[in-house]
Length: 218
Image 1: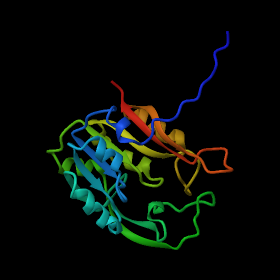
Image 2: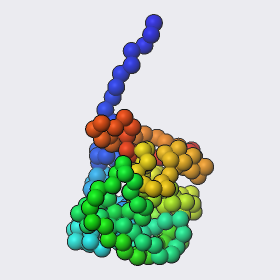
Image 3: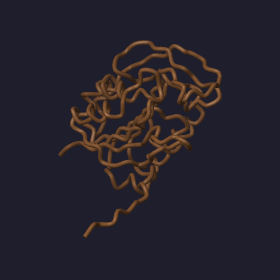
């Protein structure tokens, strides 16, 4: 007898679900923006390392620091150290990115190009030898996720869970393919565990991006 297929809702980027995934002592939030409160609420006793290149978010980040045990690094992270120009969307800061948007995702908003310092997660890891394990890493860098991961090979050896916003459709000129990131994660010892959110746009057959959970292979 043919089995019926059923659809189930995604677990969602919610603290009540996230707290079941792991119990990290350190949470690294790359691409803080106005805050990833589901993470903070899921692990209120953890030490948070907030990594954000845009100082425009500083008032919001100060609010996070007033409630949680945080350290803040106002830099970008990538594959290598250096200085790089970021495209800042003046009307929607969340859409700021190192990469130029393609016609699929271009907003038409005013763009400011700003030179910012880039470090690597491995450099941050080596500079903080007191960082307690296990570690949970969240990445939301508007298309630069693969570069962030490739600059974190040592850190990832001590990381249990990674939550990343991953492009599915091509959103940026020269951006990675979805499978590129999946294969890179596999090579680094992680497997795709679940999807927290999949974002579709009306009229498009393919999702644009998803929030994905990767777990270390045991």
